[in-house]
Image (cartoon, rainbow, N blue to C red; front, top):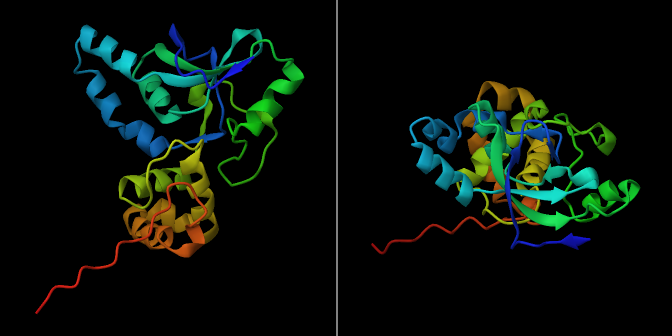
Length: 215
C-alpha cells in the first residue's frame, strides 16, 4: 500500500466509466463554463495532448485496480461533457492491495471521500456516484467556487476545501437567494468569508484594512 506518491504518472484511461468520483456533488456552473473546456475545441491535436499531460487528475487506485478521483472533478466533468473519453491521471495513493472492506474507511481517514449530498446530508459511501457525469449539482458548491475566484479565500491543497466552504455557506445563506440572485449572493458570501466565523476553514484570510490617505 502506497499513499501520497506524487511521482507516478499513468497512461490515459476511460474517465467516463472506470474512474469513480469521491464526492456526491459538483459545481455544475463551473463545469459548464470551465474556461479550459471552452477552449478545448479550438486546440490542435498536439495542443490537446500537451494540455492533458500538464493537467493530470489526482486519483487513488482502489480494489480491482479501479481509479478514484479525489480532486479536479469539475475539470474532468467539463472535459467529459466536451466528448473526451480519456485523461491523464496522477496517482496519489495505491491501495489496490488493501482489503475492500477497509478501502473506503481509509479514504475517509485521509479526507479523500466527501459523502455529503447537495442538501448537506451525510450519505452512505456505498451510494457514491459511479460516474463523473452522475454528480449532483450543488449551488452552494458553485457559490464557494465563485467566492474563491473573487478573493474570498485562498486556493489551498487541503482536500475538498471548497466543499467545506460550501457547507458554511449552506448554514448562513438561503438557498433561494443562491439560485435566484447568484451575483447578489456572492456579495453576501464575501462578507461572510472574511468574518471570524470562517477562520477555521482552509484558505481563510482577513480582509485587508483600508489604506488611509493623508490629507
